[in-house]
Image (cartoon, rainbow over all chains, first blue to last red; front, side, top):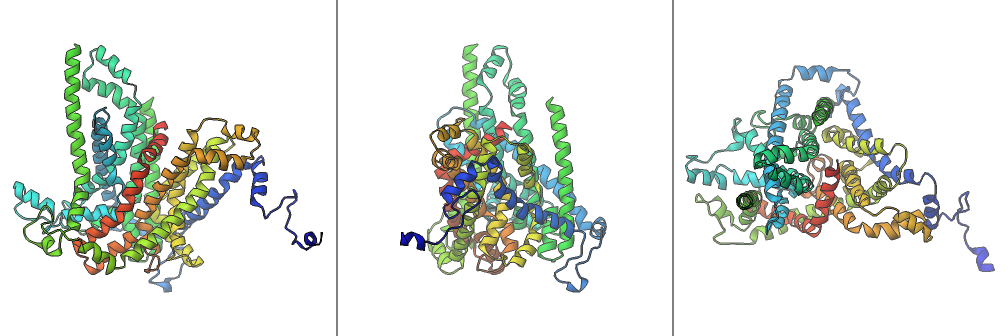
Length: 319
Length: 281
């Protein structure tokens, strides 16, 4: 009896639950009618704290002066000045055009490579399964490694690709591909294509496997050729996945400056300067947080407008 | 008719093999070249005559990058950040994805869509305020701060992928477990989680690989060797110290080994998880 009296009193909830025994009160919580919401609440808190709040702050920041190098300017609201400055900023316009080129060329290349790979890998042949796993490898490589592998292979003096091109007679001497404004963006697109196409191949392959084989047999019986079957069966079967993959990739390409940051840093000149990279440079090198915020807001708005139009159009053509 | 069909099929098979082998070469040749370079001496790399395989293969690049640079520290920092990211995503994300998959409640589809849309927010727009917030809370330049930042793009991804694995479970498992006397949380922990453990492992590894590889957030949110991750460290070494190619290649090979091993372990389940959500629409 004495032992029992000396035991410390544990805090008890209104329901008479022992709060120090998680098994018990979690069990009670899990029987609550709002259990489904309870499970989601932690993730909502996280999303608000690390996505919504910073993003909202970033948008507000775009209307303020904030240069870490010029504390004398203060951090007051300056309305739309950053946006007005942007209109007169030649680099912004170059970056806008480059973003367009970068995204269109990269997506086209990745789409073509991914579709070709998926069509080839969608066959029951010995060894094909292994190949379809191995070709995913580049996609799992970090941008830092992917970028530097190609920087090494394309090095004007030591690069193996320059060596091969010289031996084949395409070049008379090693070319500094990333130093030439005419080739820098194009080569970066090829590197991005190498790095990104497995994602397209993976999803296209999964969608191809979902198309019933009977459809092709029926088409063959009706006398349809390979090309006709491709246009009439394969492409319609891939339609949904094409819409989804392209939009995911466009979002990724617009938002992430990583690969270009590693390959070219936006140069030579501004030949590979894209919006995300320019915004990042404004923040990271120039410490002009306000202007960087405005650049990213513009990028985000353009992306949103694109997504809405794109989804409208793709839904229209789907009907 | 049947014969010509058979012949067309055979031709197609050969074309398919040709294309597949092209992609195999295209995909892997650069990686093989990285490995070859990592075994060459600096003299052999800068030689005017390019060698296509290491004539005097050496392992000194590996020894040097490990012993004479901050690489081990960088990798430890990355490991720490990766583990924290995975722990956060697995605990918070599993609960949410389970709820999204198994229960019906008002607002569910709006929330799911919301989790998809937040992935559209540009990282650059988030990084600046995150930088200021983390500085305020003293989280700047810490592994925890970086892991929290990674959660911003990995948590929604985790929830969507994990939801696919929960969706594939047979229905009414929870009900059955509750009839046997489990509470709902008991049913989740004792019955359902063991059934999705492969999917959970694959999704966790996907998140781990992404945070191990991440560059942009790490560049902005870490400033010292105390928490700097290996991608940033490696890139800085290239820029600042004109890192010799051999060492860079060795560093690259070392750092992608864990990625390749983890992927190999769960590739089948991971591919299923990545494709199921997308293919269903």
